[in-house]
Image (cartoon, rainbow, N blue to C red; front, top):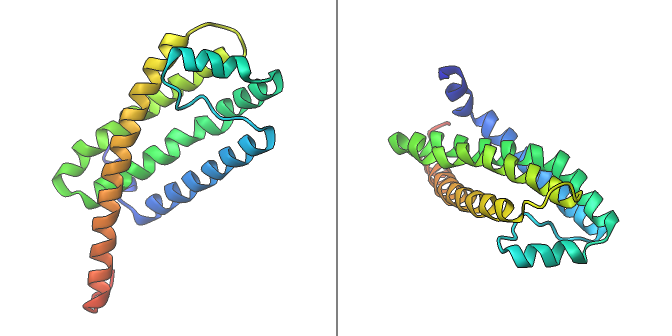
Length: 169
């Protein structure tokens, strides 16, 4: 566990996770634009979810299912690692505690993805479970995003302050 924490404290890990998050994000945008659909990842109302799925073509549903089963498996690991790394590096003694939601969001996001694939392929009607997982995922994700943004701001400020005073980082 200490080795993992040490790896998460390295700037290379933070940058790798940032780049991975950006690449996967661009992948989502590209796939959604090509197959002309909006993901169901942010829909947290059962009726809106049902309406959205009904409006999608079979091709769009299949493209969405494959996107969820590929890119959306990588995504929580990428952004989760980024958020955790930033929190651990720049939020001092509170970093580990504030990083916990970004750790928990990974299995929640993966579980939501599994339920989405089952919905998109008409394998199971788990609308309520999907909505619960989405609300939990979005809450954890947004908490992680906010704390990571604060951490990145602190880290950036510290970096530029050291450069301005002539200290090397």
